[in-house]
Every structure is written in structure tokens, then in C-alpha cells.
Amino acid sequence: MSRVRDFGAAGNGEADDTEALAHVLRSGDGVLVLSRGTYRITRTLEIDLQRFNRIGIDGSQGTATVVMEGPGPAFRFVGTHGGSAAPDTFKPEVWDRQRMPQISNLEIRGAHPEADGIEVTGTMEATFSGVLLRQLRHGIRLVKRNRNVLITGCHIFHNTGAGIFCEDLNLHQFNITGNHISYNRLGGIRIERSEIRNLQITGNDIEYNNFKIFGKDRFDPTEPTAEIYFDCRERTEGVPSPSIREFTIASNTIQATHSPNGCNIRIIGPDPTGVLPIGMGTISGNLIGNQAINLHLTACRGISITGNHIYGGYRHNVRMEGCDDMALTGNVFGHNYWVPGKQIDNNLFLEACSDCVLQGLQVRGAPEGRTTWTEDWAGGAARLHEALIEMNDCRRMVVNGCLFRDPCPVGIQAVDCSQVTLTGCQLHDTREKSLTRAAVVWKGTGTGNLMASNRFDAPVEREAGCEVEGI
Image (cartoon, rainbow, N blue to C red; front, side, top):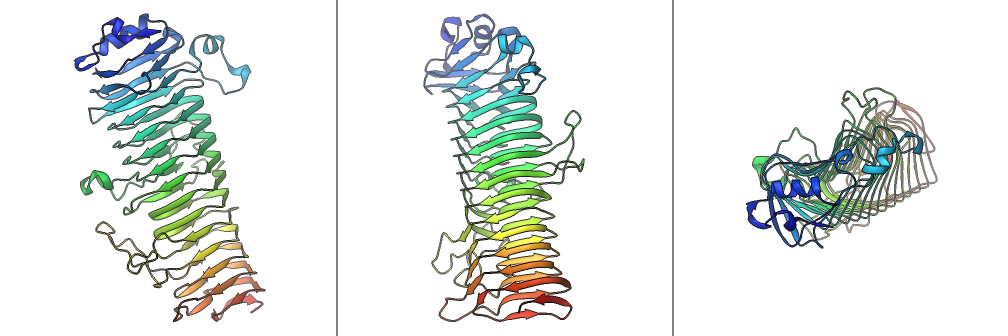
């Protein structure tokens, strides 16, 4: 155990301790212990794992703070692992000298606009636990190639970039569990131009990750963000197929303060190679709410969205564009506020989607018939909806066993849709004075649509040219 004060670190918040900490990394026994204090550094402490051997950094049960006063990460772990997680792809030195680098029980704070907390590349089993990262650009940044990363029990708070940022990355086996990730301007968990597999985001509190706390002058309306943000539209040299598959987003609280163009979960395709669309994932058992869009999916395939409570989408609860093989089952689309003047209507908007199942949904409109909540920063973002569920140019869709309550003006609207089956659903307006014009509206062209065994207390409207059986 190498105590940094034995190597000349002052830890008084005034002296520059960069060289003292670098000396410990070079000459210590591999366990770098920072006792209670504040340690100023002015450049990145780069930890070459092959050179320094196995390394662990500990902040004495959270009593130590490292303040990064220069650009770049406070700590950068660099390994040489170029294989997968399969045992036969490892060179001996990865297990002998590099495996499982750690930082635990430490605060890392930024004092430079381009200061990051931790960066990792080429590592196997990098593990971060009990770390507080705040007032940085990015909290934890993962680049190039890594395997089997664990981030658990961390507080990633109030950073100008992303809390956890993956870019130009090839990473399989990635667990993000039990963290608080809040008030990060570019998102809580942000992945761009990367190949990710076996990603588990579970049991986290992920909230308020948008520009709002930083002021209107930090808002760029062309820059999409989200609490959880996946973007596979661009390809980077060295990443053969930018795609995110085999992922689980489960048992998280994912909430926000409304911001224009904001989103709770935003997953954007397509994969530019056309080989592996974002998908083979599940979004289950989460509380998701209070943004312009709660769940925004573009060009995704094969995602199961099950058992979530979703509320407070100023524009949409769910917006899906060009998606197929999707299942939305057993979700509740409800409300947080019921008082007059503070209501947000619910809406699912599906465009150019196919082969999707919507089953067992509980969808309730705003009792006042429209969104009446206004905020200084709303920017006109609240959208007047055509229906609780809007489907445009969709094919081979199943809507079954859903309960729709208090729509205004329409429960379900299908425009230019074909082979849509609507069965076993109920729709009721329980207001003292009904605001529902129609239960279902079929518009435009479309063929092979079917309705059966539904119970509606409002009429069905159908334009000529849209073929519907079972009315």
C-alpha cells in the first residue's frame, strides 16, 4: 500500500501534487492510497498498465478529492488488450500485469473546461466503484477497445458533457449498475459511433441530464441528447459495424426536467453498413418520464419494451420511426399531476413501422383533453395530438387487449396503414362531459385491416379507400 503523502503529496488544495502522484504510480507497490485531503493536478496521470503493472487507486472511503486543473482526463488507463473476452484471445501480459485496474472511493472534480474524470482504452475488467465525478466535461470516457467494464455505486453529477461517454469504441460485456447519474448536459449515458454488446444498465437513478441547469445560452437545439442516448448513424475507422445490440435497460428511474428536443431514452439508427440495426434489446421495469419525448426510437429492430410506467411526454410518450419487429407490452402510460392546469396528454406516434405488437397497454389521456402544463422553457414543445395512438404508413401491426381512457379527440388514428389488426380493446371516455369524437379513425389508403371483439363507447370513422373488416 503506497500512501501518496509518503511520496511528497501535500493534499492541502494549494500545492500542485501532479508529480507526487505520478511518482507513486511509477515507484509504488500498485495500491495508490490518497488519504483525506484535496490533491491538485495539472495534467493527465497516464497509467500504462504494461509498464506499471496492476494498479488500484483508493480515496480512503471517499475522503480524498483530486482536482483536475488541466485539459483531458485526470486518470487515463492504457492497456494492450486487442482480443475479445474469449480466453484464447488474451496475451499472457494482460492477465499478468494489466487485468482489473480500479478506482474506488474517490472524488474527482474538474477545474478546467476540458477536464474529464477517467478515460480507459485497451483494458480488461476496468472497475470503478464509489467514485464521485463532478464539475468535469465527461465523467467516465471509454474509447477504442475495452472488455468487461464495471461501473457501480458511483455518483456522476453536474458535468458539462456526458456522465458516461462511449465514442469510437468496441466494447462487449459492460455493466452500469446502481449509480446516480444526474445533471450532465449532454446526457447521462451517451454512446456514439461504437460497437457495443452485452450492455446492462440496471438499477440506476438517471435524471435531469440536459442543458437546463446550465442555462439557455448552453442550449443547442440541433444537438439531440437524452438521459440514455445511443447513436449508430456514423461510422468510424476501426469500428467495423457501429451498432448496439444485446442490451438491457431495466429497473431504472429515468426522469428529467422538460427541455426542448429533450428525451429520456433516444436510440437512433440506422447502422450505416446496413448489417446490424440497433436492437436485440429490452427496456423493462423502468419509471420513465417528464421530457419532450419519453422514448424515441429510429430504425430499430427487435426491442421488447415491457412493464414500464411512462408519463409526461410533452410531444410524445413514444415516437418510433422506421422500426420493425418491436413489442410494446404491459406498459402504463399515465400521469404524475392530475390537478387542472398541470396536465400532460399521452401519445404514441408510429411512422413507417412494420411487424410490431402493441399489447396490454394502459393509455389514459389528459382529463382536461390536452396538455395544459406550461413552463418558461417549453418553447411551444407541447404538441396537440391527433389521437392517443397515431400510426402513419405502418404495415402488419397488432393492437390487442389495450385499455384506452379519456382520449381527445380520438383514441386510435391510422393513416395509410395496411394489415393492422385491432382486437380485444376497450375505449371509454369517463369525463362528466365526453371529449371523444371517435374511438378509431381510419384515413387515407390501406388494405387488409381488421377490427374484432372491441368495446368502444364512441364511433368508428372510416374514409373511402381504406378497407377495414369487422366494423
